[in-house]
Every structure is written in structure tokens, then in C-alpha cells.
Image 1 (tube, rainbow, N blue to C red):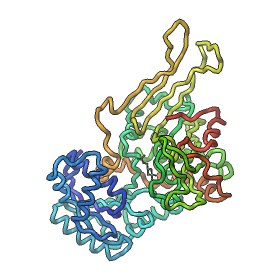
Image 2 (cartoon, rainbow, N blue to C red; image 1 turned 60 degrees about the horizontal axis):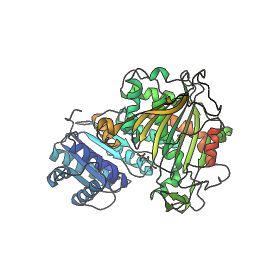
Image 3 (tube, helix red, strand yellow; image 1 turned 90 degrees about the vertical axis):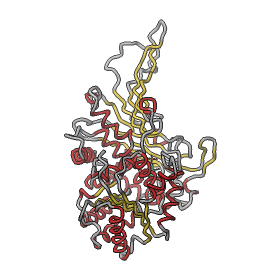
Image 4 (cartoon, rainbow, N blue to C red; image 1 turned 135 degrees about the vertical axis):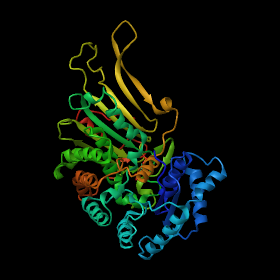
Length: 497
Ligand code: BG6
């Protein structure tokens, strides 16, 4: 990575959770790893009254609690902290932006960062239009002595029309190549490795199609509940929170054609093509391809946990889904007829995200089985996104003994064992990419639009209609019984991570 790109990062929403849990710890890890370009300025903006010193103190605590690497010595932290600044102000208030501009110019002169500016919208999404419009009105978006880019946190809209409206507002102020729509799943090492696995190896790609793949399952299971984000989650639900972004991104990486090069537009072109090939869900057929659930009270690791409706900020008769499963088809040459089953949920028995590629069985059974129910499992490839990151291929092997008895065994690649190091945090990679102007791992506007279009019939059907019979699964279980029935109808089962 070139390290000669001084920059200023301006974080709107600097007193919020993301700044403390992810952004500043990631910047700190990059600094420690000597890959953060220098000099730099990190300027936090939020409504809370705070001095630079207060902000530095807060960030020191945050790094202590959340960073992957801890400060080895006080003077190293001091060097990092001397580039942290804070500017109090309401992002909705037009008067803030002149003040912010003046402060920024001063810091750029003092620190010698030139004019490279990366803005980060990490406020509640309702403020994004105001931030972008006001930046435009005050000329902060202009590229003078350097570049200007803006990172926009998810959620990008809450349906097709609000996403389009936000895109319209953003594109009045910024050109598309200045806009970085973040999806932190794309920064995960294991997710990036999916492309390497597919396109840097010769033996898998020839099998990666309808002739060899029976179906694909993508599971993003969380054992956590809504963790104090009840008010946000009430508006979002699992479909908007996880499927519209993270899970559809995973699906695109699994299903896309090889791009002509590993550059932002060729990669993003191929991903958008996947979404455009997804068979539209008929509005009157949503129940056949989608299942939703909401957890009630239950047990997790022997501890009693409350139901979703008892969480702070959640309505006692909430309709928000905390579990969603979908079956999608990609109507193209490669994937015709191969179902992609997607599911995600809160308060499932464990945190486990994985992609399971189920291959077809052999065309003919050479080894006769005494019991016809005793089937030979077809090959299964499981990409473990997190935790226990790795890739496992399961195949049949002969059980030692005089008879031919076949048992599934696994070839397992584990990141930890192979590379001996902890993978970096997703935000580290993504922040660095934005600083270097590489948007390959960011979502383009047409992708976001197409992702909302895929889900529109489900969002509409779930938003209207009678209230669902919630809660319909106990915390600590694998979701509602309908989710199992839904794949069993197709003669399949969910893979248990
Ligand atoms: C966020 C969602 O985008 O992703 C959260 O808003 C979810 O609800 C989180 O918990 C999961 O991220 P990770 O990296 O912990 O899998």
C-alpha cells in the first residue's frame, strides 16, 4: 500500500457507537501497523459539547475496549491522539458547515495534510440528506488541492424510492466516483477470500454452476439480540438490516461471473448483473419464497434471555422480523434452476456465518447400501465467514473394515492454523481503500437500487397484511418451524453451522 497520501477524515456522528466501536479502533490499528498514511487529521463532528482533549480521552477508552491491538506505550498513543480533533455542532444546522470548513483549513495547514478530505456519514440515516446538501451549499464537496470523498454508512434508504431519493440528493453534490457506500461485510477477510478462492484456483470454477451445484445456502446467524438498538431495529427488521446489504453482497460474490479485472467497475458490473438476473418474486407468491420470525423469551448458553418485544425501544405488539429466510433463483446461464436459500436471525443458538455449496450426488451408486435410507451424502463445500474462519470440503470416505461403509469426512482449511495471525477488522481494510481511492469493496448506486428491487415484493407483503403470529421462535433456537418446513418442502435441509 502506498503510504504517501496525507488526508483528513471528518466523521459526522463522532459521539456515536460506530466511531467508538469500529472507526477509531480501526484507524488506530492501521496506525500501529504503519499503513495509515501520514500526516493525517481525524476530525470528529457531533452535537455533544466536547473539547479536543475530551474527544481524545474518550477515544483512548474506546481503543482500550474495542481495538484489535492495544497501545504498546503511552507515547505511541500520544502521537496518534495528536491528530484527533473535535468540532461540536449539529449536522442539521447550516451554520456548522462554514465553521467546519474554517477549522478544517486551519488543521490542514497546521498538520500539512494537503487538501485530501474523506467525509464519513455515521449519523442516524435521517441526517444524510441534510449533511450532503449542506456540504454542497458550503462548497465543502469541492476538490481544490486534493480529492474529496464521502463514505455513507448503511442503511442506504429503506426501500427503492427512499434509496433513489438519497441517490438523487447525493449525486447533486458528488460524482459517483466520490461516493463510497459502505457494507462492512465486503471488508471481511473471508469475504474477500471468496473471490480469491474462486478466481485464483483452477479446480473450483469448472464446478461452480448448475451442472454440479444442487443448491446454495447462505446463513448469517447471530446469538445477540438487538443490543439496545431496539428503536432502529423496529424500523428495519432483518430483511433491511442484513439481507438487503450483507447477504445479497455475499450472494453476488458467490454467483458472479469472473470480472475482466479486479478493479472497482468490472467487479461491481458483475455483481449488479447477478441482482438483475434474480427472478422477480411475484407479489402474490411471497409466502412460497419467504419466511419471517420474531424471537420470544428463551435460553442462550443456559441463560434466560427476554423476547424481542421486551427489549428497550420495542413495541409490545411489534411486527418487526428478527429472522428472515428467502429462496431466490438466478435466471442466467450458470445458475438456472439452482435455489439460493438465504437466512439470518437474531438470538439464534450461535454466531455463525457461512456459505454452504451443496453439490449433486454421483449419477450412479456403485456401492450398494444395505439400508436405502442410508444415503451417501453428496459433496458439500462450506465457507465459514465467521467465527472459526475457514473453508471445509466434505466427501465420502471408506470406513476402515472388511465392508464398504462410507462416512463423510472433511478437508478443512483454517485461517488461524494456516496464517497464524488474526485477520484485520473489516473497517481497517475499507477505510484504507477509501483513502487510497479504491471503491472495489464499496456498493455502487445501481447495485443498491437493484438490491432494493429484489426485496420490494417481500417488504410490501410483510408491511401490509394482517399482523404476523409473533413471537414464533424461542430465543436460542434456529428460527421458526416454518423456516425448516420451507426447505424440507424442496427435499432439503438447512446445514447446521
Ligand atoms: C450490522 C447490523 O450491519 O451488522 C447488525 O446492523 C448486525 O444488526 C451486524 O449485528 C453484524 O455484523 P458482524 O460483523 O458482527 O457480523
